[in-house]
Length: 116
Figure 1 (cartoon, rainbow, N blue to C red):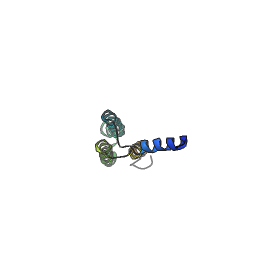
Figure 2: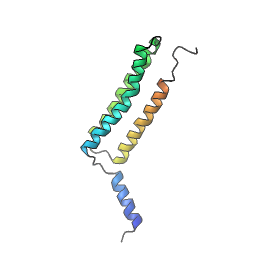
Figure 3: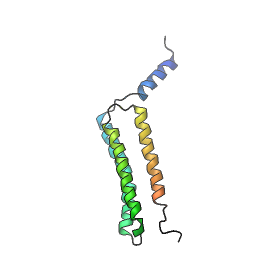
């Protein structure tokens, strides 16, 4: 006879290792993470292109375009993978969010022309 703790642990294990995800949830997740990944790069590119005096930042702009491409590959991999467990999917999504925060902090704190 199983105890309540064993039953709870079994349900938790089934949830963590579940590979079933509804299609609509995958679509919403991909759209959300794609927008979250692209917004800082769009903001940075608008600053570089339209603000005067930011010409020396173009190398960082190219780096940020490569960055967003790599992030979008990871996000779309989450969408197309059918055998990824829930805990791995959540860990990758958390890593994308944390990496995006650090990228935003890095790219907007740069001073490529040296101290002013």
